[in-house]
Length: 246
Image (cartoon, rainbow, N blue to C red; front, side):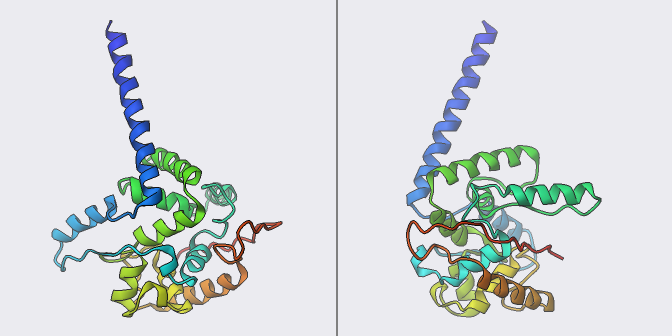
């Protein structure tokens, strides 16, 4: 009797989980993401800090974002983004091999994984969260286009203290709009992404300026995103140039 009750409870929880998460993924396929768990956490962190509280975010559609911006984050964060299905197996294998050889741990998260984490999950680093991240990555790769994933990513990712998304960053760091960002400005923003609370695109350090030059170089080597013609195919994937963050 008790076993049946437990079974029904677990079944109902699982059904609720799958139905609710499916609904959320489908909703965000069409509608803007105005708030994320990270935004909320950072807000409360700022309340308990000495500095001013800042929460700047404004959603803009993909066609109102500089075409250099997606190229910059692909060059910086995930060279194979247009080709993989959410998980960069090659990069994961490299990270594991380097760790086994005694090297330091480094991230192998794709833009899809970062988007899933930013939009649907709490900011933590543990195996439970990683499992949910894999689930949501699979879901958005299944139900969203690559362009939609990039659109949500560029609108929701943390790009500075209290700055979320490319429109807010363009306004407060460069006094312009997302659509008017230059190649260099986009590369600087991308250079902050390993740690946007330390790196500041408005006041770049010498390290960031070096990263900017590397990112701009890689941008020239990668195919345009999105492809110039719909249905355009490539016979090979580009060489990978993901940087090791200092």
